[in-house]
Image 1 (tube, rainbow, N blue to C red):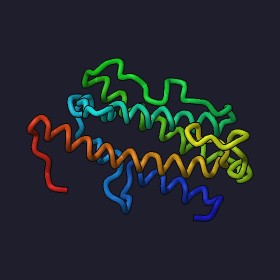
Image 2 (image 1 turned 90 degrees about the horizontal axis):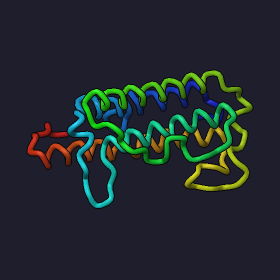
Image 3 (image 1 turned 45 degrees about the vertical axis):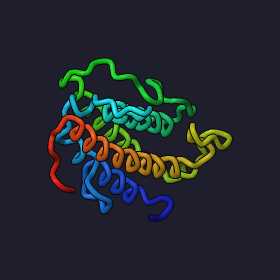
Length: 172
């Protein structure tokens, strides 16, 4: 992908979110049949639940969008790993809808981004946990990598949550 390949970047982000990526199911496909009970299952050992991971992905998608609009780099407004305030099925469906909405807002923002903006720096120095010291284009590609990484976790957590409750999963 060329450094300024806007349409290629959008296509990659869309495939990982709700398309047909080469690496396996999209995030949306992984989460399609996840219930609130699956999502809130605590894996233990300091690992995050499906729900916490979805909120984390949403937070960083919103933060990257805010930065692209010119906001100074910061930890996401609702936190790196937001707390799950309500564990009802309706709240779970809202969490998924808000992740979809954040993703769509990011894609709309990328569509309107000038070519020059892709090469502008995010922050003044490298801070890996904060995601600074890279270009806007690198930040956008890195968010896609972040989402694919966590999507793999979501798939594993879903299998573990169901196995812990004795719910059979079809073979991958």
